[in-house]
Length: 349
Image (cartoon, rainbow, N blue to C red; front, side, top):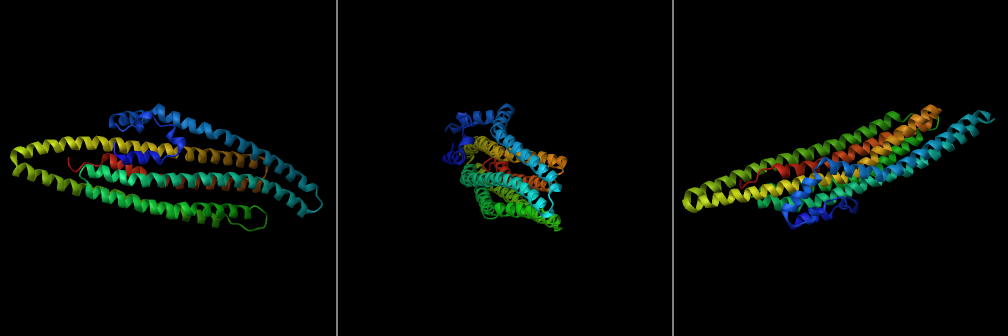
């Protein structure tokens, strides 16, 4: 195995590295292939997913219990509101209960945001480790132009991921939560349409940028691979005609090397896809579970007649959905890169 493969494994978080089969860290490509075969099995992936769910389920259940408890208190304050002589005092008590719910949501919402930014950091490290690894494997197969194209595309992706997505997620979520809090009091100010437009434009820009990167990486890598293959076949043809006896031996040797490189690239490519999925599982499961918590809380708030809390919980659940979309979109580029690595034909073939 190339030395760069160890750098790719070393870029993974400890909680993911503990789930990997021991053979994946071997220098023997045969043992690595067996470990990748084990990782691609349904039982292994299901076991890893269930382990991830189990680690985060307790926190989600505690948060759900806390939210429901605060909603019950808010409903009690709402029922006592009519007993206050001053309407403003009743509103103050009701708004205080809403702020307690908001405080619990903000604490956990920013924990989810930290989880997303942490995953983007891991994805950035994976991309940084994948660039030299892909270059080496492409160059071993004679795909020199493809190596340069894929390395350039992934470098652009890594820069965009760090500069735009990583730095914009926290301000975006903070603004959405601020808009949601402003809309809770009964002041007549309606910010729902403005907030929906803001979120839609953010995700539209993010999707458009990732679509451009996907198209650029796929087109450049595929075209460069075709050019490398044509150049290599021309060289093989010339060797076979100019040196008849030795040329045939060279042609057979090249075919054997091509099969070995294709085997190695397929192993590394599939392993890369599985590593991305395993890294994505914890963040994605956490976001999905907390989104379910907010949705259940919104349903309970609706039953208790807590309209402000319901809008706040609905908005938080919607915001979590946007975080899920951002994580999924960012993962797709590296998934495609690893898929192209596994299926791109070796030039020496």
